[in-house]
Amino acid sequence: MTPHPIVSGAAAGATLLAAASAAAGPVQTDHVGLELVSETTALAPGRSATLGLRFVHEPHWHTYWINPGDSGLAAKLSWQLPAGFKAGEILWPAPQRFDVDGLFNFGYSGDVLLPVQLEVPSNAKRGSAVQLAVEARWLVCREECIPGKAMLTLDLPIAAEAVTDPRWHAGFAAARAAQPQRAAWTGAAHERGDRIEVALSGSDLPSDPALDAFVVQRQVVGYAPPQINRGASTLTVSFAKSEYFTSVPAALDLLLVAGVPPNIRAWSTTAPLVTDKAQP
Amino acid sequence: MKLHSTVIALLLICGVSVPAWARIAVGEPAPDFSLTDSNGKTQTLSQYKGKIVVLEWNNPECPFVGKHYGGGNMQKQQADATTAGVVWLTINSGAAGKQGHLDAGGANAYIAKVGAKQTAYVFDPAGTAGHLYGARTTPHIYIIDAQGVLRYMGGIDSIPSTDKDDLAKATQYVPQVLAELKAGKAVSVTTSQPYGCGVKYGS
Image 1: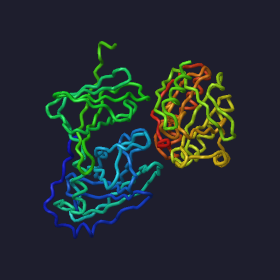
Image 2: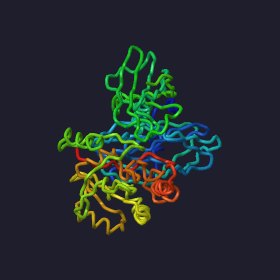
Image 3: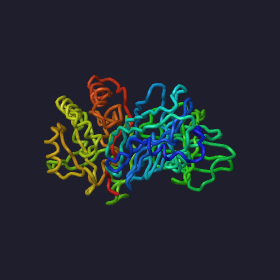
Image 4: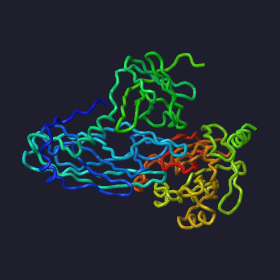
């Protein structure tokens, strides 16, 4: 994933407008609060804007990454937008690993924004206002799990300039820091007995002592922490093969993650499957 | 016998603590277990040799389980299977004090309330059978043929959600596998991604 483009904002200064235009506030449900927020206080015609689905979890509760791990379910969004507006997929921030009595889950805790890119049509009329609405479905778990569903709305004016909303500046900055950066490594995935090994090489492989790794695709690798071995300019990530493995996809989407929010860094790479000729 | 020694080794290594995950595979003999059901009877896999056995991991309070019982899907699959001579064991590996853990009275009340039609509702509070099978979620399904060979492991159906509206749209794997086994055909889908709540094992 490339870092998503950001609507460049001048310095803050449109808080008045934002306060006046923000219709729906947070929705508090079981163990998590949700809110649809915008990085900017207005939308500019023909530009792209960044929205965020903000989850505020109660302590010990979590929601899920696109691959939830051993159990759980990722959030799903269904948008209701004015004509010409288009919302992209969730730009999933790097997940945390949760160990729940030996089962591993991948997701988010605390205060987190899931960014979504919004395309504003060029014919959007300046001075008008639009309502953005999204139906969110999610599963929030501690050990026990509760499914949730809410309709979230956000009213925003259309203006020539989109100005950063200071209320969400830190949240979007954190979401951006947690976006996996596309790495320029070369990588290959190998099926070796009951393991899947991904061999990476490059000059800028992360040197963080505590690295974790996650695979986007399901039914390929198991969800326990992988073994990570470093060479001079190589990194090998070895996962147990999933018990639900049927075949290796043509390419594995791999994330390397260092640290925890707000000091999290993540890299993404796609490793094509390489068939080893000489199998013992 | 290989399987028995595996069970014994697990018990010896683990003592009273949580057992380690075993690794089982479709096409291989399913490991035996011995558990007590909600009527106080012992239930083993080996006693059903000669019959097809369905194992269903259960936590009555899990919303994914609720989807399949609330929509009548699980009860119908249980009734259809047991009517056709299939053994259906519902297993609760919830540890004492965890959500969904039941005693015998609680389980029998739950069965009556939802109209469940399984052969027996069995308890695995130490998580022994759960770890032996690698049960991760509720529900989580395993299907064993009359020769004791594992033929299916994975999700109950093809759409991971808590939404009852998805039941009709999903491929329901249990009736599909049972029909194929009855017809002497190869099982077309032998594994799928299990989905649901995590099994509430003890720590």
